[in-house]
Image (tube, rainbow, N blue to C red; front, side, top):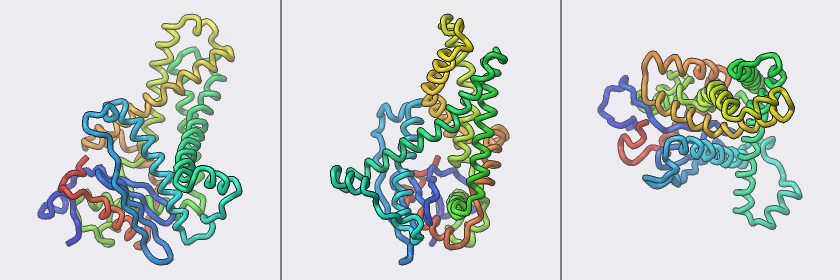
Length: 337
């Protein structure tokens, strides 16, 4: 019998919410369960399945405290995602993704050793990707917003301008990459991931036919999380910036100067971990509830997924089904959100 969620004798229309989630890869999908991670890629020889046990913080660890676990989980997801992408690139049958190592790569591998070199590469790529995202979606809007500081005196107004610029850049970025031919198959695998999780949450047998009928939109997608971060940053930056100017009158006295702009940019960048943590807690809460209010909150993220997901073919759905099955917990219901 095909696996279904929680209780195999339950009503197939009765839904539950799983913590299982994933990421589209190059000709594959990475899926994360409560106990295991799985990387499933389609190669010339067939499906390549790699399952690893997750290293989770111990019960009671401060890493699981609210407002700390958000940042920890976010960075862990970045590192795991980069590792999976690199693995899928190695397995890809498309020679475009397989490049000969450069002299620098060979030198670093020789000095660090193969395993340490891989770790260096993974963490470097994760940090670089994070810095580029911060630069494009936060630093650039802050610089643009700074030019309005002499005209708009309200901190809410300034941060609202930054927020509008941030959202415009984010949407333009999403639309642009969605039109790239190289990304269309990746986004189709993204759609396969969502459809399979939807099917699993509806407690239907995980078959190609059942998965194909599901929507490719999912409220707990990473795209939705990023959107929450960007919207929430407007509120957090506005409140915190106003409080800072009240507490530090000398900073308010030099408002409009280069030093003031630099100080405000640095202050807001330092607030980003807090924004990510609050967004994570909101995402957890929304994930546990389904009502009119939560549906309004998730609506913008679902709409954005029109750009980040495509309809998958049956071979992609097979990959997603294999990935979900590989991370199902041994204890029934252990993956419930």
